[in-house]
Structures are given as C-alpha cells and as structure tokens.
Length: 373
Image 1 (tube, rainbow, N blue to C red):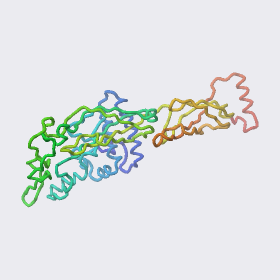
Image 2 (cartoon, one colour; image 1 turned 60 degrees about the vertical axis):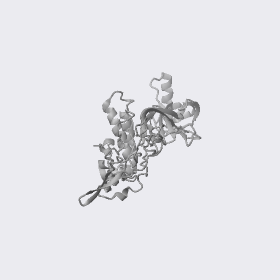
Image 3 (tube, helix red, strand yellow; image 1 turned 90 degrees about the vertical axis):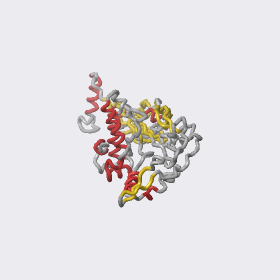
Image 4 (cartoon, rainbow, N blue to C red; image 1 turned 90 degrees about the horizontal axis):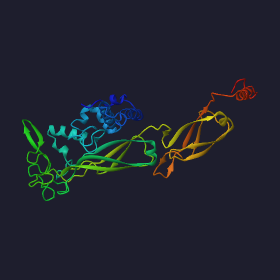
C-alpha cells in the first residue's frame, strides 16, 4: 500500500501548491542520497518524498487521490509504480504518464459489469500500446543552474527490437488481427445473468496473433538494453523544474510509440547566494565609515566576475543595493535578473585610544541625542 502523500510531506489536505513545494524541497534535500551515502532508510525516504510530490503537484493525480485514495493508483498506476522492477536503481521510478490512470481503472470496472463499449477506441486494432514514461532526479549547484549543464543518465530499459520493428514478428510486419476477439483483446463470457469480459485466450489479450515470432525478441517486440541519455539542463533553470525528452522512455509494444523520459531538477542551496526568481541576493558586511560616508566596494558575482559598486553615503544596515543584470539568466539566456547586496555592518572590536577619542567626540556632537551613534 502506498503511503499517504500528505503525511509523507507533512502537509494538510488543504495545503496550497506553494506549501507542498516548500515541504518537498526541504525533505528532498534532507534525504537525498548524495547527503546520505549508504543510508538505506534515507534512500527509502527520498523515494517516498518524490512519489508523494509526484502525486500532489499534479492537479489530476491529487484529485484522484483525494477521491479514491490508494485505489486511484492500484496495480502499479501510481508515481512509484515499476512493473518488472526498477531499471535505474536509487532515485529512479516510473512516472504515471505512460501507465494506466483513472480511465483504465474505470474501464476495468465497467468491463466487470459487462459494459465493454467503454473501451471503444482505447486500443488500436493491432493492439499497439504506448511505452511507459521514466523519471529521474538530479541535484545541481546554483552555479550549474546559472551556466546550464549536460547531465548523463545511465540505466537499462526495454527498447524497440530493431529486427522486427517492435512488432514481434519474424517478417517485421504487424501481426494479423486476432480472429476471435477482432483486435479488442477481450472476449465476452456469460456468467449467469451477467455478461463479463476477460482477456482473449487466443491472443492473451494482445489483440493480434503472432504465428512466427521474431528470433531476437521472442515475439515481445522489445529487448532489454543498457542505455545512456544526455539531458541538457538549460541555463537559469528553476528549482523543481521537470524536463521532458519525448520518446526516450520505455519502448511501446506491437509497434506502439515509446514513452517519454522526465528529469526532475533540484537546485542545491548556495552558501553565498540566495535566489529569488531570476534575482540573486548576497550578504555583505561593510565598515560603518563606508556606510556613513559612501565609497566603492568590490563585489564577486556568481560567474566569478569582480564588480566595482558604489555605496551611497548614509546607506543603512538592512538596505539592499541593486546591481542590474547580474542575477540568473531568464528566457533563453538573453536577459538576466539583478543582484542585490544585503548590507550589514562591521563593528570594530579593538580600537586605539585615538580612535576611541574620535568616536567619543563624534557621539557628543549636536547632530542628535547624546550617544545617538
């Protein structure tokens, strides 16, 4: 049984999308395998968090869970489904996109009551079925998010048999339609007063019958192979973004199209820069004399540039100085957000007698109340 996704993320059922995303980011960073090498419990928690978020971030999946609970994803239809085992290992799972959904659940229920017409058009006449989608997670640095990078994924999965073009036949052509079920994959069975539908025994529910199987795939239409995919992560990508590679998922059956490959990107917190959309924020402690009198300071940017920035006289602690165009890339990297300097102050801890005297005289001036500085 799948765990309650709300409980896994620690949110209530009426939680907003923003609250769900915030809880997810906190937990995925906590339990990520990179931070917990060899910790099986953390590894399992990481998978649970990803599966829970995969359900709650999608309005349709969330609505299905709220209405039907675990039954909405029974039989391997949930985010963590992985029929035949997980080809990736740690951190990978099958996505819901290429598998069965609520329509399949209702279709099976309708068949059980003898309403076979609900399945009309759901299966092609030759039994072709789309392959399952695959999902991977990657954690990158903020610097990688700034420049963009290529992430290489290595895994194994079913791919279309080249010899038979995915049809499973010796001649590489689509198999003839099953004469018993006429390509539907199901036959009507009378049980007392009820007419039920069950998989066709002639073609095992495929909708077609292979007389002579392909020697390479033994009629399956797919073969299992090791694969490598290079995923280009664009510059400026947001934390929590999902990239899609069409047709790079599991191979379809009987000539059906392949599923898609998805990559969820998480951006690791940076020690120097905080991110706010396309803008970056960095904290800088400055001498109080620079804040009072003004001056110029050197500022390092995320792309290793050094800028000379003017500090206006009278700048207050807590103000943010804006440096235009030195934030994160936006759009296709043709424009950039801004860099903000969060101003703090350096208070000297060791003063000479002369410095103490000067500061004391300054504090006694009539500019403000005694001791105002």
